[in-house]
Image 1 (cartoon, helix red, strand yellow):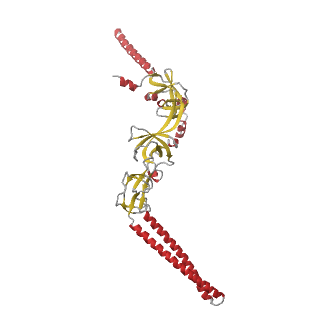
Image 2: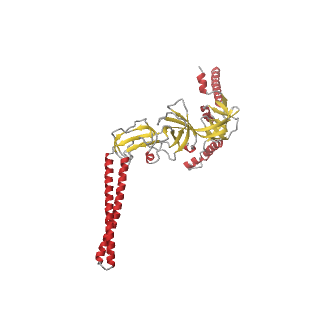
Length: 438
């Protein structure tokens, strides 16, 4: 009996010992701090140039859309797409028969009005002579009042008829000028030296003039010796644009070459601004057109795709850190206040009956600040910074950290998990280690 009790006690103490050992091991592992592998770099001075990247199309600086001012049938089209033309060369001939007839009719009306004017002049001269002769007789009491009034009235009527004939002749003259102008518009000449970059109409087609509506677009004449890149810039970057800024251009058709562009024009209004913009989706990004004059001469064709990198701002010999080093965290005092406010809220929950409003919560919510993590021995120290401009690899640091200080520069996962005071060790990124492991 004693042996049985003794055995039970041994089993119980054994179970208790194993449990204690397990709890001890668990506590040790919980207390063990996780070490984060990071890469570091020292804060150094560099020259930075901020770039704005945009896409667009190559277009001629000067191009003219040819549309007729009068309607009719195309009877002459001596050019084809790709032809080079000089200013004054014949581009389009519209059938002139109706306009020639209108011009001849207007000329006949003008000549008739001139004849009527001459007739009215003769009648006025006659009426004036008779009026003067009867006025002398009236002064001598040789004609009655009624007879004198009759000649006076005839003279006044003749003057009005002559004035009316002058207006009619002027009207006929203007009609003749308009008919002649319409006739001349049946012949369309090249307004500039250039190349027929687009031909949309063919011989025999009927076209509408601009007097009716927008008119028919027959062709486009462009000067291909001067080209520009027209790119779309977002509203956040367009405020950085200034005429004269330099851009580096890459045209898809010339992959092995880079071209230089200069900002010449910046749109004052966003693309599509107006009624069509109101109908478009509110999710569409707001874009502004910026024009870049291409400095090199090449066989560009209108509509080629282009990628532009525009130099907006530059800094010389400024403190810089890698882009990956800059991240956001809550301020240290915000974390402390958040923890204490949580404890106070728990203690006061028994006395406060009305919960705080959502507005009050929003006002008390702290904002993230930009920070870098400096290396302090085997720990990371969170350092608030204020950054300036940046390029593809580095940010300018305006304040917050001094030159030569070692900071964490990678990798992305490590910087994401870092907190103030976390233990770190320098090493290669996990991804590279895994790749090298057979």
